[in-house]
Amino acid sequence: MKGFDYSEIKEGKFYDRMRPIGKIFDKLQYKIEYVGLENIPKEGGFILASNHMCALDPVFIAIGMEDRQLHFMGKKELFENKIVKFFLTKFNGFPIVRGGADSEALNYAIRIVKEGYVLGIFPEGTRSKDYKPGRAKTGVAVIAKEAK
Image 1: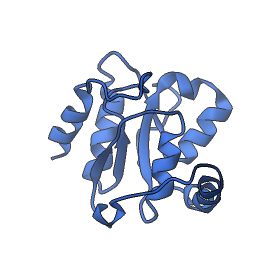
Image 2: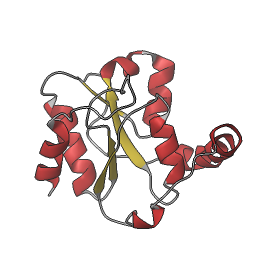
Image 3: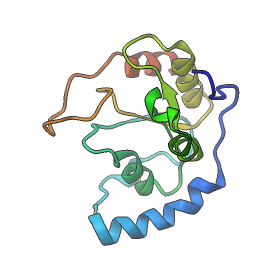
Image 4: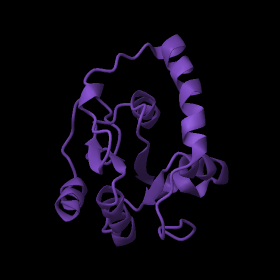
């Protein structure tokens, strides 16, 4: 997608500075309980795949992973608003064109994992409207296979 720099993978200080604020908000408003965090690798690349039930899912997941930053892909339409794009990119988000083969975004996702970062992905490609898991798209399997 034009306007996004896929040339290098970056992780910023803004992400880590905002996480404590998110944790406070989480504890006061949502009281989410994180289970299994001890299973998150401290180093090396991997894919964190999750069901997508609400728009704040990437935030909730990022708050729970204290030692690692995530790189989430999001539909390109989210990046068309300059303010939203600013925040998404500060939180390591990157755009993908849904419904087709966005080779630039897929190659970037593969590089994220291969270079030791964490790729956050919602395999169904969209939020669940009925809070039940849907059928996963093939993209996550392609990324996993190529990233080994």
